[in-house]
Amino acid sequence: MKRILNSFSALVGLTIAVWFFSAIAIMYFIDDWGARGTFGDLFGAVNALFSGLAFAGLLYSLLENKRQIMAQQEELMLNRQELLKARKIQEKTEKAIEAQVSQMKNTARLSGLNTLVNYFTAKINDSNSTDDEIQLAKEKRREAIREIDRLIKWANADDF
Image 1 (cartoon, rainbow, N blue to C red):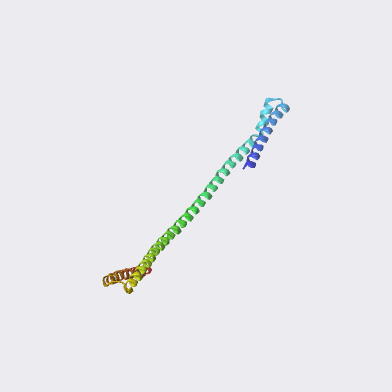
Image 2: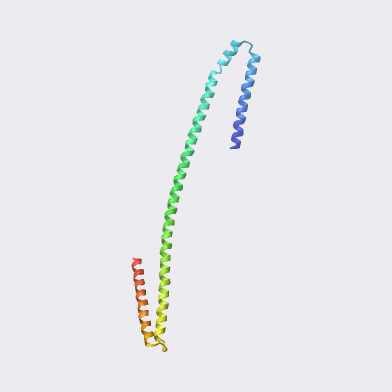
């Protein structure tokens, strides 16, 4: 960009220098004001040419800016689409993590219930346990087994 700016500055400087020196040359070589006017009229077409070139440059600049804006809009649209895809993937990941956490909770609960069943079974089989302790252990073991069955049925229902 800096190189283009330097080139543009050089062209502007050169144009001003040529204009200045041409004015001095006209004043020096042509003495009559009428002849100077006629000589200046010869360059009316050149003036129109430069004006047309300036206008064409302006149009080119506008069209180039429009093209760049369209390219940026297209890039923004692609970025939006990528963000939507990423969001959908993130939502699926969150759902999978939630399901995994739920499964981990159930696994921990089953493990705890299994420990209780083992404890109550050991209490039932302990020769030092009283009949009331054995009866209570059997009831608690049945409750734990029912809860295990309920969790297993719920897990099987979720698989479908």
